[in-house]
Length: 217
Image (tube, rainbow, N blue to C red; front, side, top):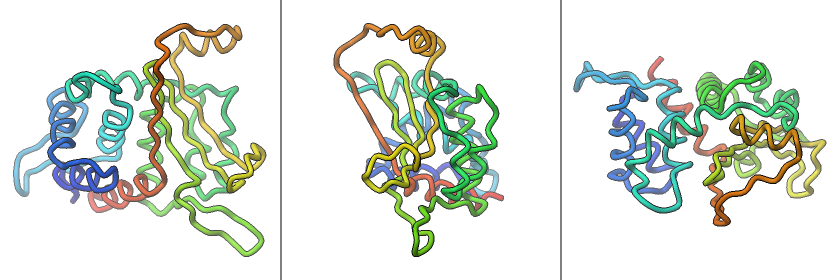
């Protein structure tokens, strides 16, 4: 059984941030019901893929400035609830990268649901791979989950073109808010702050979280 403390430690190691900082994010989520809770010792809560997804979102999508930890719940809910933008996604290509579960997600699913599904699937054995003439190989940096702000937007991208930028060799899921999707459909630029932030994690973090979650089953 994997515990909240082990999730915090794994997240801190994978993202390269202090354990103390991750503990603060985790505490905010636990107090708001966004992380499984239990007692101590043997009665400690067994974490789920959803717990891992929520903590990853809260940290990776946190604001560029200000009291970021105090914004953990708002950040988790704002980004976790983003809906898939089907017309900008290439979901049916994920099986070729060893991630068939992502291709089975229903239209209109959320980013939180996608990350929960992905972490759970990786814990059960799915692994990101790129296929070439010599056979499949793993290249963590060619898979990314990207969070952008301050206007919430996210992307899950598997890039098999290895730097060539060929969209025909990519699988992609785009997540945005209803208002941004409406503007996208009407091809209208959205106005907002001109300071933009982008944060990205690779498959290495997804693998670490999936491995941790598999211990709880």
